[in-house]
Image (cartoon, rainbow, N blue to C red; front, top):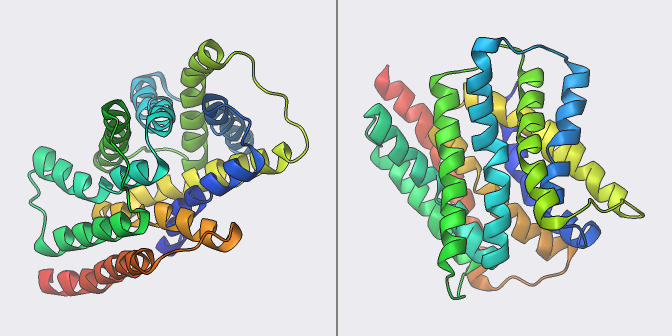
Length: 283
C-alpha cells in the first residue's frame, strides 16, 4: 500500500466536524462514538471474519480500549469543556508526545530534525486555530489524556505488531471498543436517536469512510511507517477541519491562519525531505 494513502486518514477525520455539524448536529456525542465503532466493526468482520486466539484476547482488549473505548469518551469530554480550537491545539501535541514516549520507553533520543518538524507543525496549528479562550482544566486533562492514549497505542502497535489479518483486526478493535462505550452512552444519553433524513448520509460517511476505511489505513500505517512521520500526518486533521470550514461553510481565514496553513505544510514537506537524507547518512 502506498504510504501516501495513510495520509487520507487524518484528512477524513478532519471532515468529522463538518459532517457532524451539518448532518448530525442533534446526535449526542457518545451515540455518535458508538455508531463510529460498532457498525464499521461488524462490517469489517463480515468482510474478513476471523477468530482471535485466546492468548491474544488481553492484548486486543487493551488496544481496543486505548484506541477506541477510552479515546472516544475522552474526546467527548474535551469537546464538552473546551472550544474546538483549544482541543485541536492540544491534540496537535501528538508528534512531540510520540518523540517523548520513544525517548522514555525505548531510550531513542529524538533527532534535532524531528524536534524541529514537530515544533514547527505545532506552531502552525496554534496559528491556524488561534485558541484565545479560557482553559477548563477538566477539558485540558481529557484532551491531553486522549492524545496520550493514542501515543501509547501507536508505540505498542509498532513494538508488538499484530500478526494476523489487518481488516479483521481493525474490525475487532472497533467492535470491542464500541461495546465498551455502549453502556456509557445508554447511561448518560438514554436511548439512541432514530436516524432520519440527512442523518443517513452523515452516518454513512462516518461509518464507511471515517471509521472502516480510515482505521484500516491508519493501522497499516502504524505497522509500516515511522512513528515520527505518522505523528506529523495527524496535523492534517485540524488543518482539514479549518479548510473544510473555509471552503464548504464560507468561514473566512485571516492572514495568520493562512500562515499557519503554510507552516503545517512546511513541517510535513521538511520531514519528507529530511528523511531520505537521514537514510543516506545512516547508510
